[in-house]
Length: 489
Image (cartoon, rainbow, N blue to C red; front, side, top):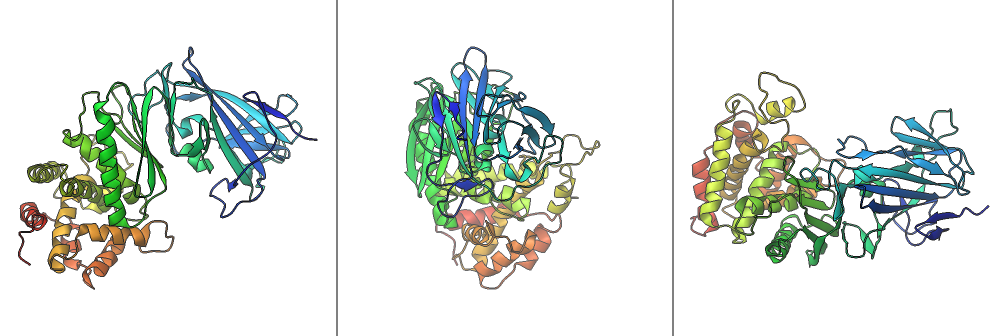
């Protein structure tokens, strides 16, 4: 019997276009086993978002609809109501990884649930805001996703795998006509294709009173959404993003995806200022921020865009991923004339001071600091809990160790190769490659490739493997001389 499910006033009876598996894109068009269509509909007066999901396809005795795992939610997602194609209510039971939906005709199902938030504005960019003027949320806050590998045999049986199932994903936004949608997905009008379940969750969803502009740089389509009355940012953000993307393309040689969104939402105080999630970057800047005059905001933007490449590195130490990205961002801003020489010098000296102020400066190596992340040490309650924290050794000491590595590489190659060159080599050796060297061994091998055989054993021994004291001023003076073309090689 043909399943007929009504969604937003239209019958969903088939699948169009390219299909995808739940975990990765299909390599070529194929017939989809399942079609999953979502409608995102804000309830403007209630501060809620009503979510509807329709699955068309053979589901047997039931389906497990998963939450995204390993996240700390700021909003609240209700228990879904579920119906089959004839409107008969299905059984909904709690599953360790989401909700198990069983019963009915077995030819498909429709789910409805609500998402609420603490208020109309998110508390920081990792928060959730649902109001009369906009919705702002991470994908994992909104979407449940069916997992064919957890499809139930029966209502009272354990879940078993169904095997590979090709899935076609669609998202429709049922929103006021004046609202703008900012998502890093391919789509037209109010219909978008997230491609995978990971694409649903690992992104930032924004719609509402955003001013939207689209630019193209380095083969990437960038959609910039700025909420509120901040017209001074419109042109400056686009220009800076374009310049950094082009620099990144020249450095790494590959572009991480073909779509990117940069969001400046209106946020309430008290949360994080920066969030990068998949192909989305959000910056919770105050309305007084002006670019390029605000150096801190400028560096945040450059760092997060470079993080699209650096954040994809697998098995690379945090001092290089975090501190190295900070240093590369400062170097790029200097080379692009977005900050003057004096600011470049000042910011690296500030990083040195931050490192010197760390209570374990002379005792912890990078590896020793990383070993304590995620643990509770009551004797040091104020120390950073993550390598991404500004006050961590990974970032503060990592910045200046990266500066010194830049100088060492230049010295070893008569000024021909620099940390920028090393970054490209590390990325090409590591990102998306399953079988490769990891840890500092990967960095040493990349250094040998850049220098023509020198693994820089002394540098790693003195400044990476032990808490040695970096000679910051000397390295900074050398780098500034090289950047101005005044260093004799």
